Image (cartoon, rainbow, N blue to C red; front, side):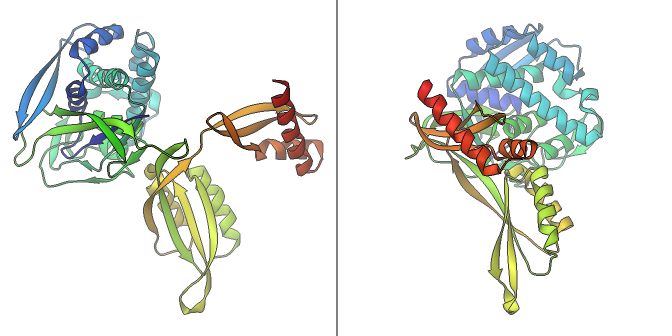
Length: 395
């Protein structure tokens, strides 16, 4: 699987991403040709090699005659929908703009449908995001990862006035992701750049195991003192796995409890799953002062860490919690539906090299039918498995 790793030691923006993709091998003429499928006139795209603190990088510039600086999310999505872009390009661009719109909606406390982009609504910003998605498609990128992001510091002038760095939309997009500042008084991560990595990247942190086949350096417009203002993208194949599947980074939250009402655990589990937890479980432990206690463990996506920490502090008796990152490997899975005498049941299947490893009827489907038909749950499960086996023999 082709993997792209964003190395954001000097941040990331839309034009830096475009520059890195061109530097890595996506031809500018190809970008121009595909961007015409947007059917939005009045832009020009150019690229040149520049030096940034002794490092050569590609600087991509978008010139535009656009007079419409403000566009709603729905207007941008309509442009994408009516475009002649490849489906994957259109879908990725729409997802990035939607993620950006959701961040702006939270910042301004308005419904998503009322969001109007300012700087990001201009044609040059649209070309940046769509052009980046064309570049990802051109270079065959299927999976994305990102380093910790250097966000910079100071203030920046925006449509809403003077704002702190990172600006609110960027901060919202990067919530739960590793960020830092090395003291540069400048905006290094723009909302566009943050939206790209927040939408596409499955993991944030050190470079994952990969065989690098191409490297691209995209230049920012400013010259920074003491460091090159460039984004590096590493492209290659992920490390071979003994078992097909995929790796992803998850967050693990743990806390020890010895004084909580047992009735609260079930309530907390339901709320944690509704908040985005991937799994919640408890383990009996022996604590200090020889007290029996409970180790409460929550697994979640890294971006959901803060929300689940807040829930733990609000709903349990803990005074502190531990967090760390872990790698998770899961088998590819698919669902099929089978018919039983009680009703339809979804079957979850995992395969390796076309060989079926595991088959499991969906519990929720079986439970619902068992209650509706007033029959034992095990009977529904058994009949669903028989129906799957019979379907396999007849196909």
